[in-house]
Image (spheres, rainbow, N blue to C red):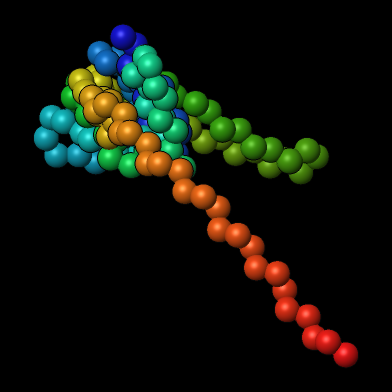
Length: 132
Protein backbone atom coordinates (compact mmCIF):
# COMPACT_ATOMS: atom_id res chain seq x y z
CA UNK A 1 0.00 0.00 0.00
CA UNK A 2 1.41 3.34 -1.05
CA UNK A 3 0.34 5.96 1.49
CA UNK A 4 1.34 9.54 0.82
CA UNK A 5 0.30 13.05 1.79
CA UNK A 6 0.87 16.60 0.63
CA UNK A 7 1.69 19.01 3.44
CA UNK A 8 2.31 22.73 3.56
CA UNK A 9 5.29 24.12 5.46
CA UNK A 10 7.29 27.30 5.03
CA UNK A 11 4.96 28.52 2.30
CA UNK A 12 5.78 25.47 0.16
CA UNK A 13 4.06 22.16 -0.51
CA UNK A 14 5.85 18.83 0.01
CA UNK A 15 4.76 15.35 -1.08
CA UNK A 16 5.76 12.89 1.65
CA UNK A 17 5.50 9.13 2.16
CA UNK A 18 6.30 6.99 5.18
CA UNK A 19 10.05 6.89 5.87
CA UNK A 20 10.90 9.87 3.63
CA UNK A 21 13.74 12.21 4.56
CA UNK A 22 12.78 15.80 3.77
CA UNK A 23 14.51 19.15 4.15
CA UNK A 24 12.24 22.08 5.00
CA UNK A 25 12.86 25.68 5.97
CA UNK A 26 13.98 26.12 9.56
CA UNK A 27 11.31 25.27 12.13
CA UNK A 28 11.32 26.66 15.67
CA UNK A 29 10.58 23.45 17.58
CA UNK A 30 11.29 22.01 20.98
CA UNK A 31 11.72 18.26 21.18
CA UNK A 32 12.47 15.55 18.68
CA UNK A 33 9.09 15.33 16.88
CA UNK A 34 7.05 17.79 14.85
CA UNK A 35 3.39 17.49 13.81
CA UNK A 36 2.10 19.03 10.59
CA UNK A 37 -1.63 19.69 10.67
CA UNK A 38 -1.79 21.58 7.38
CA UNK A 39 -2.40 18.52 5.21
CA UNK A 40 -3.78 19.28 1.75
CA UNK A 41 -4.20 15.70 0.45
CA UNK A 42 -4.01 12.15 1.82
CA UNK A 43 -3.96 8.99 -0.32
CA UNK A 44 -3.97 5.47 1.15
CA UNK A 45 -3.81 3.37 -2.00
CA UNK A 46 -7.58 3.05 -2.40
CA UNK A 47 -9.08 6.41 -1.53
CA UNK A 48 -7.95 9.98 -1.94
CA UNK A 49 -9.00 12.73 0.47
CA UNK A 50 -8.63 16.23 -0.91
CA UNK A 51 -8.99 19.14 1.48
CA UNK A 52 -10.84 22.34 0.82
CA UNK A 53 -8.24 23.70 1.56
CA UNK A 54 -7.20 21.30 4.38
CA UNK A 55 -8.14 17.70 5.21
CA UNK A 56 -9.91 17.78 8.57
CA UNK A 57 -8.34 15.54 11.20
CA UNK A 58 -5.32 14.58 9.09
CA UNK A 59 -1.80 14.93 10.50
CA UNK A 60 1.75 14.03 9.51
CA UNK A 61 4.29 13.34 12.26
CA UNK A 62 8.01 13.60 11.56
CA UNK A 63 11.14 12.97 13.61
CA UNK A 64 13.79 15.70 13.71
CA UNK A 65 17.11 14.50 12.32
CA UNK A 66 19.06 17.74 12.45
CA UNK A 67 18.24 21.39 13.19
CA UNK A 68 19.63 24.60 11.71
CA UNK A 69 21.52 23.24 8.71
CA UNK A 70 22.93 25.99 6.52
CA UNK A 71 22.30 25.67 2.81
CA UNK A 72 24.41 26.71 -0.13
CA UNK A 73 25.42 30.38 -0.28
CA UNK A 74 23.84 32.50 -2.96
CA UNK A 75 24.97 35.89 -4.17
CA UNK A 76 22.68 38.78 -4.93
CA UNK A 77 24.27 41.37 -7.23
CA UNK A 78 22.54 44.62 -8.14
CA UNK A 79 23.78 47.33 -10.41
CA UNK A 80 22.57 50.29 -12.38
CA UNK A 81 24.08 50.84 -15.75
CA UNK A 82 26.15 54.01 -16.42
CA UNK A 83 25.94 55.24 -12.82
CA UNK A 84 28.73 53.25 -11.06
CA UNK A 85 26.24 51.66 -8.65
CA UNK A 86 27.09 48.11 -7.62
CA UNK A 87 25.93 46.19 -4.57
CA UNK A 88 26.75 42.60 -3.61
CA UNK A 89 24.89 40.70 -0.93
CA UNK A 90 25.03 37.08 0.22
CA UNK A 91 22.48 34.74 1.81
CA UNK A 92 22.52 31.24 3.35
CA UNK A 93 19.13 29.69 4.08
CA UNK A 94 18.80 27.53 7.21
CA UNK A 95 16.96 24.21 7.02
CA UNK A 96 15.68 21.42 9.26
CA UNK A 97 16.05 17.76 8.25
CA UNK A 98 13.09 15.50 9.07
CA UNK A 99 12.05 11.88 8.65
CA UNK A 100 8.33 11.10 8.23
CA UNK A 101 7.24 8.44 10.72
CA UNK A 102 3.41 8.62 10.61
CA UNK A 103 0.65 9.75 8.28
CA UNK A 104 -2.77 9.81 9.93
CA UNK A 105 -5.94 10.75 8.09
CA UNK A 106 -9.43 10.89 9.49
CA UNK A 107 -10.64 8.08 7.18
CA UNK A 108 -7.47 6.03 6.62
CA UNK A 109 -8.40 3.16 8.91
CA UNK A 110 -12.16 3.62 9.05
CA UNK A 111 -14.65 1.89 6.79
CA UNK A 112 -16.87 4.01 4.63
CA UNK A 113 -20.10 4.95 6.35
CA UNK A 114 -23.34 3.85 4.73
CA UNK A 115 -24.92 6.61 2.76
CA UNK A 116 -28.19 8.02 4.05
CA UNK A 117 -31.30 7.27 2.00
CA UNK A 118 -32.04 9.90 -0.58
CA UNK A 119 -34.93 12.23 0.17
CA UNK A 120 -37.45 13.33 -2.42
CA UNK A 121 -36.96 16.89 -3.64
CA UNK A 122 -39.36 19.49 -2.29
CA UNK A 123 -41.95 20.57 -4.84
CA UNK A 124 -41.63 24.18 -5.91
CA UNK A 125 -44.53 26.49 -5.14
CA UNK A 126 -46.08 28.42 -7.96
CA UNK A 127 -45.78 32.19 -7.66
CA UNK A 128 -48.94 34.05 -6.69
CA UNK A 129 -50.22 36.38 -9.37
CA UNK A 130 -52.70 39.20 -8.81
CA UNK A 131 -55.89 39.32 -10.86
CA UNK A 132 -56.89 42.55 -12.50
